[in-house]
Length: 538
Image 1: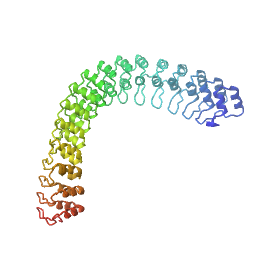
Image 2: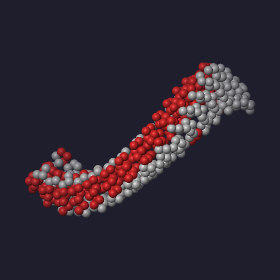
Image 3: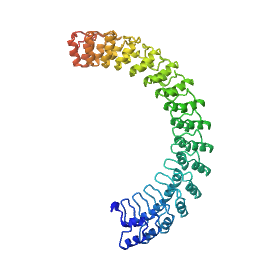
Image 4: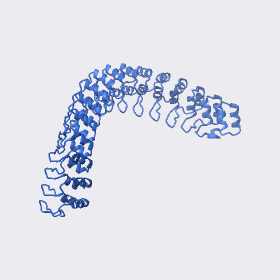
């Protein structure tokens, strides 16, 4: 038969006692199984067919047979709330605490379904009231999850463990709190449940209620002296969670109950840092109304405004600035919110910061201005914003590089052109005499070199303090395209460094054969000696 269902299974399910008897008289296998492992006794028990159950047991059916998922006949009777069948099975000797493959007992099933009659039968027959399923859930946990209030009351009458914990440390109150069952949470606390019990991650029921946006449960927990600033394993408070989720009502409830608006978690994030990062303007406003600090910094030195800038949360950024946030606050490495806006190309944030008098020329620890960062990252619109806001196109980093150096090095010709149109110096040299063209030559950025030399008249042979020209640099790094460009525009093929090295010396020293050929074809002198009298071929 399909799915191995026999006539005896069908007759048992529908309570056809005469048919069952006749089939058994004709040697029907009393414990035959379907594909799912169900016997006729399972079917009769699930359907509450008392007479059939009695007949099958009398005819030798085994009450210990289990389905593929581990369900016994008693589980099935419980699942259908068939008290008489369950009682009969117990009288005949079935194991009252038999478990499924997930270690669920019949009492777990009764709790899940909310069946108080069969639950009471099991409890009166002394089943294990605190039996633990595979995940550590007791019948009370399951009843709390499913909001089976009458079963909960029954279990409490039979002295179940109200503080039993799952594998992850959840008590029944944690479960009720997360599920939003206020009536269950109140009942448990009236019977002594601890509102501050921690899980293995040190989360209290309050943490879980906040996480699942259960405002009424939160109020009930707080009325029962739940610790409003309880800290989880990462030092996260319920207020951090409410801020992350953007729940302004929850945030208000917690603050009114005395939550510390400036409590910090693992990385020194306050709730305001979290709200700024997530862009929850209404939550940020509630926190600020309750005196949350605008200046507190994370371990990386970020203020809430830094977070808003980094994650492009313009609404929060404007709110913070309106409430007095310092637009020039310096984080780790001296980075201001404007530096972060430049790095992440946050044009709307940059506009708000500049309007709030952010310093367009503020220096990071390495001497970078926001324009250095925008130039390097090729954020053209943002760079134009900065230049319109007074950014100095000739500002030098600690290594002596201007924004034009970085744009040329990274190969951003449009950025180079924009900077040069805003008073950048085409041949500006670093402390060591390195010009933008030297860096373009090093990285083979021909399009940038065209802007510098062809469009803006930059020198083709500027020398570093050691006397190196861009052609020397290109030869050292084997940048063939750049070498051809430089030679085509008149670079000195026999230019000398302070140590009398020609580009041919450099190419020969590095073993760049193709470059040697190019230089010789361009008229390089193979007999010139350097300061130590070496020929290029030495």
